[in-house]
Length: 212
Image 1 (cartoon, helix red, strand yellow):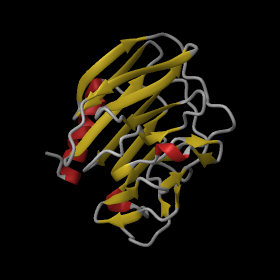
Image 2 (cartoon, rainbow, N blue to C red):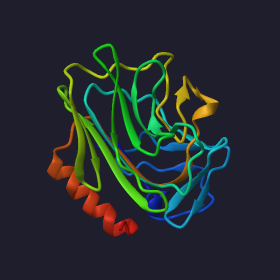
Image 3 (cartoon, rainbow, N blue to C red):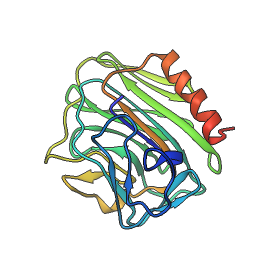
């Protein structure tokens, strides 16, 4: 586990509704810097879909797992990026304009994407893992889709950062990709979790964030 953001403990030990840094609970690196004032409410960070985002750092792994707990009440009509670093290459998770969660990973020379269901007006738990031969996406701890593809995840161009709430370009962003909704939790691993590990994390988040 290299990154863990938790809305209940955004400063590490507790909550602070004015902090402009989202503390990484996994280690002393990769804390996120809030840009253009996304707003803390209760146990989540709210993004306006216009200019809110969180800048992290460069994070590139050949195999990985990403897990997000989010909520949306409406669509902007565009693809909205939740977490990722997809400048020409890289990887990430987005909410698609068609109403699905899309996991989009640049593997073996091109972007490979698979989808999973998403329910508006509810808190959703979505995960994606890549182990070097299989790209798997999960909804509520249960596998939703799988794609067999061998290779490694190529790092993005331009020293692109990992970010929340937008698709980053270098240290800035693509203005048409902002996420409108709430982010409760984000985890990033430098390995592929097993299905049992993903289910374990989902059960933890289910209790913590009252996922129905």
